[in-house]
Image (tube, rainbow, N blue to C red):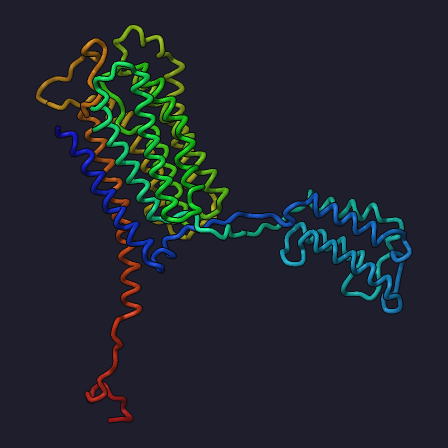
Length: 458
């Protein structure tokens, strides 16, 4: 029963993360420091068709004929002054150029000067130029760039310690799947029923993650749902087809569903720590995590084929196409995240350790398949590993954790331990700031001591 050590470690880290989470959300100031508030970029004007409709309506009202659009002295003709001024103000207001300057607004302002120039007391001669003025205004949006403003969502979408708790929960779920579920289902004969039971139990871990999000803040369920729900397709593919199709001696320790969800949580956490709180960017990065999950599924497929090469009925699945696809997939996921590190996001000038955790997790998981598990480590090095990949009528007891998986489990726990330790340090730093800034007792000089007196008092 030595394999139970592989679930005791994650449970210990989960307990620390739970303590950290409770200590943070129960104190007002640490909770504010720990909160994640996102924003979205909005262009100005937000809807050009609506603005353009209102502008054309204004032209219909204030430019019915060319009476006021001939050379006019605004000092003596207040009616035409008001007519031109109202039209110019409406154009600038609808294009939102009164607050937010941009290249597009520079173009619009130059066109509007012909209608009403604020620096002169006369208007330009625009007789017969109504249509060309409208055309010039519409052309500005095609030739120039709009202004963009960051609009806060106004809600707390997540807590950093809640994400850490989610990660430790998923790591514990992965260990539970290997140590407990595989052992309980070792006598299950129907592969599809076994897959259904495992999918249901793994799905429960997703529900636990969503509960964590609601406890941390009522609005954070959206981001947590983006992390936990889309990879369910990967879960269904892995459990219902791949694991039932390959009765092999060794399966990867890191489940593709947990890999994808942990990668999504790490991505959310790393971007929050780097100050990248654009909601659209975060969604895009989480979609990338699902792409990496499917690539990881491809690598598992190839690894299972390699482990089952001595089975005649499985050799038909392997081919040059599968080999090329696997190589390109590994290169693609490496490039995908290395380029992501250099993306021109508006982030803090200095990078923290957390910024590199997603690519570190990808490196750890993929090398666990392509390197650690590929060596087929033996539990007893004094004896050579068996060359027979099938035992007991084409089935190997899945609940036994092989030597390679033990190494992967240890490295994974080390990775999560460093992550939890980082946030324990962050929490202690904030806690010390509170104590040092607000001491319980006031500090006064002892004026009875001569050496503390001012020169004038001595």
